[in-house]
Each structure stands twice: as C-alpha cells, then as structure tokens.
Image 1: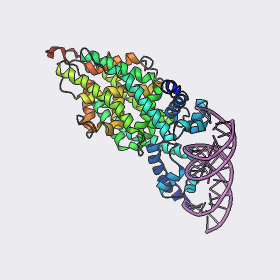
Image 2 (image 1 turned 45 degrees about the vertical axis):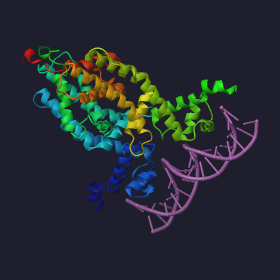
Image 3 (image 1 turned 90 degrees about the vertical axis):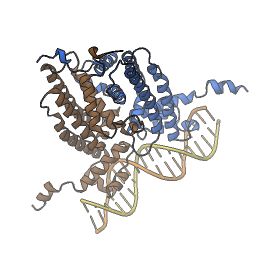
Image 4 (image 1 turned 30 degrees about the horizontal axis):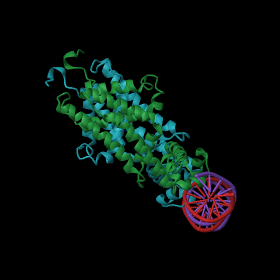
Length: 214
Length: 214
DNA sequence: GTCTATAGATTGATAGAC
DNA sequence: GTCTATCAATCTATAGAC
C-alpha cells in the first residue's frame, strides 16, 4: 500500500541514470563497442545492478531507443503543425526540425546508427517510424501549397521533402567537418542556414530569364 | 630474383580476399561487431593467417579504409571535371556522384560509419579528406557559375553544395526506407531523382510572380 | 603462407549475501 | 535495490608445426 505512490511517481530513479549513460555511450560508439561494464561505470553503479532493471543488453538498448523515439517524436510534433502559407510553414518546419536535432544530438546519432545497420534489424522499425511522420507531414505541407497555387505543380513533393530533410541531416552531422572550411560561415548559425536553404528551395538559384545579362 | 615479379604483380592475393571480406563485414556491422574469426571465415582462410598480413585488427581496419578512400576518390574524380555551363556541370556532378555512391555501397557506408564515430578517431581524417575534394570541387562549379553570370550571386555556394551532397547522401542511405512510401516513385531511378533535384536547385519551386493566380 | 592449438583478457550474464 | 564474486563464452593475438 505504501509502495504504490513511489511505484508510479519515482519508478525508474536509478533506471534513468542507466538509460542516460547508455544513451550517450551507444550514440558515441555503437551497440557492440559499448560493454555493460562501461555503462555501469558511467552510471556510477555496479554492472550487476543493470540486470535488475533490464533482462539483458538488448533489452536495455531497446529501452534506450524507445525512449529516444518517444522523446524525438514528442518534440518534433511542434515542427509539424503547419499554419499559414506553405512558404511560412516550410520555414517553420525546417528551422524547428533542425533545432530539435541539435538539441538532442545523442538521440539523433542513435537513430542514424540504426539506419546504417544491416543484417540484424535490432530496432529498425522504431527509427523508420520516426522519419515516417516527418516525411508525411512535410509532403503534406508541400502538397497543400501546390493545391492552393502558391507552389508550382510540376515538382514532386516527396523529392523536395527528401531534399529538405537531407539538408538538415547533413548539416547536423557535418558541422565539425564544415567548420574546417573558412569559406563556410553558416556553421554556427543553424537558423540562418535553414532559412537560406528553404529560400533556395523556394526561389531557386538560377537567374530569372528577364534579369539575365552576360 | 625470381620472386621479384610476383612481389610487385601478385602482392596481396590472399590479402585482397581478406580486405574484401573485412570491407563488407565492417560496412554492415561496424568495427566492434565484427570478429577476426568472422572475417577469416568469410575470406575462406584461418584466423591466424590474417595476422600474417596485418599486425592487428586496427591495422586491418585502417587498410580497408585506406583502400576504400583511394577507390572512392579515384572514381569520383570523374564527377569533378566540370566543363560547359554551370547548370550542365552541376547535373553531371550530381548524377556521377550518386552513381558512384550506388556502385560502391559498402565503401560508402564504411565512410558514413566513420563520420558517426565519436571519441576515438580511428580514421576520421580519411573520411574527411574524401568529402573535402568533393565539396571544394562543387563549390568551384557554383562559384564559376556566379562569376559568369549564369547563376545568381546572392546565394552561398557552400550552402548549395551542402544541399546537393546531402540530397545525394540521404537518397543513397534512405532508399529502402523511401521504398515503403507508395507515393515515392523515384527510388529506383537515381538519375531521374538527381536531374529533378538539380532542377529544383536551379529553378526553384516557387511560382514565378508573373504566373501566379490564386 | 597456411594451419591447429592455445594463451590471456574481456565479455554478457548469474548466484547469492546484505 | 545494490553489491561482490564468479561462470562460461568469446575475443584478440601468439606460438609453433608444416
């Protein structure tokens, strides 16, 4: 009777420490490169104690990925509410999406690792489901923009959605690499990058025919 | 004296089998998930024989990545020779780049894994160098197009280069995922995808002001 | 060059005291 | 719930015969 309160309120006190440590280690080095001993040390507990909360290493990994999936999808819901014209909705989506990626780098890298995996599909479906919502929502914005005449109708919404997500993911993953190029000055201003990126998608980079002069 | 011929010509006969097997396994599962026993079995030799060619597992991994780096950079040289107008050079670059990615999926996934790594930089510099050439060459094409007046001058070449490479990488990596969407019909035609993608970059997706009617 | 056999260390997981 | 101690399996790497 007296345990009921703590059971629902504090369930997972040491459990959260384990998941937090495992989350960072799995994201940094991958599933097989991380030992239970390393997780226990990072969490400040003993290795055997982990097995009190999780039946085995796979169960722990799955719990980490499920938590990551829930956290990411919850936060990215904000990016998916589209109001106003398509151009504004696209800007909001892109900036919000990239901001959430950068806010949770461990979770995102965990997902990217899962997408790279081949062979045993440890939790591929979770990673897939995370992208599915984003993709569908983004395609919806573009298609509505086409139907309302704001966007041209001779392009594939799925293609442009792929481009936008790809632009955000490569920015997220290649910041350190891009930082080595002195000519790249958008590395530390993700919002500017995304606004300029969406502007390129919206306006295109080719000189308008009437303006050309060469 | 009689060994000289074979030394230069056939050097690395069993060595190549090992590297080929390791290349596929490392790309599929990552460094720590692959055991020397698995590599030996896949190569059809004994585990101890690997140590005759490579001093340890890290040396083998490095050799695999160096070979991958050399192979990728050699093939991608073709994508980097830009002739004619910038629009044509961009199309050629994109299609050629994506074709080379798809032709060597193992090597590319090996690189992507290395870019995801955090902590011990096993061979990060190799993966970085591979992208550096591509990036510089692509920026060069865009900048030349700007100087010759073919492209607008109010966009950042590095940003558009990032977008194009991101579009190719996400296509390469997400084909299986995109195949589950019935509305996506460019999954099996990479050249069409790339031509349409470059067209979006070149022309933009926003309705021209004089054509708008809503 | 290729193998079998094995050493030495580390791994995932369990037993049982507190 | 948390720990120490430990098992059995697996891993990297080596020794040494052929």
